[in-house]
Length: 288
Image 1: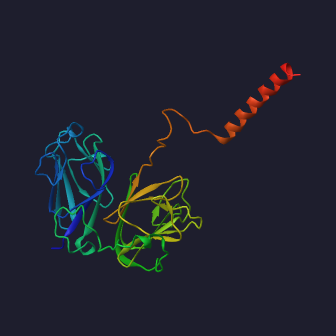
Image 2 (image 1 turned 60 degrees about the vertical axis):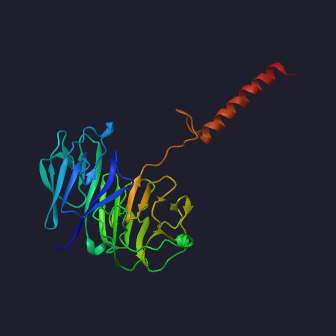
Image 3 (image 1 turned 135 degrees about the vertical axis):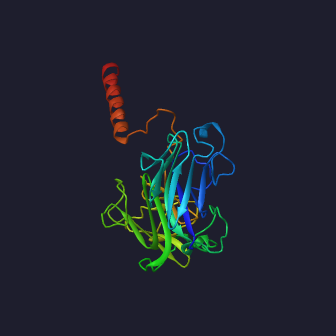
């Protein structure tokens, strides 16, 4: 019986794990506040509406069935359920929007076979070599060669998975992952896999993409926990060590005081002109 991995990617709400994506290989996954639960929420105030045993997910062949056991409900794609089979990319909400996750399925053949842990939130899909950080901005050939490698992208309510790369991201309908964002071009970025590493390739021709605020020149190595901005205006993603790009909210300008607006250059010029105009009137009236 082949081993199948259930993956949960954090989308919104409270989250009890350090990683954005957690993996389980158990045939039965219990979810709740009991310490015995595989997917364990802490017994703190923000999780009080999560039942001690909130839901269970049972593997049946190659599929997973979720069964609600809670007082406040479990929702799949917006519908309150008593039980249902889960599909790739389903959105699960526990209780009243306490925690929202995306669900995906993977097989052990595509994961690191040396990892024997049941809860492999810290495992890698591949034996990825990150020892040479100087490789990060070196262009790499072979981005169009199709290879077996897992990738998961979550952005808002969108959640999609692939078991081979490369894939393209952009606004065009022909892209593998369509991003409807004003700063995204028709064919914006390509993600590919080469020599046991994930890479990102800038297709904009304008060096719009940055990794940890450093511009990507053609292509660059993706290192776990790196922040990728697809343009100066976003959107932003976090690359996790399990081959996942998770959309993250951009931090607001911390240098501004509350309710303080960023000055508009045109408004600044207009204000300066008004000040000069008032001064001219004063000078003409009182200075001879």
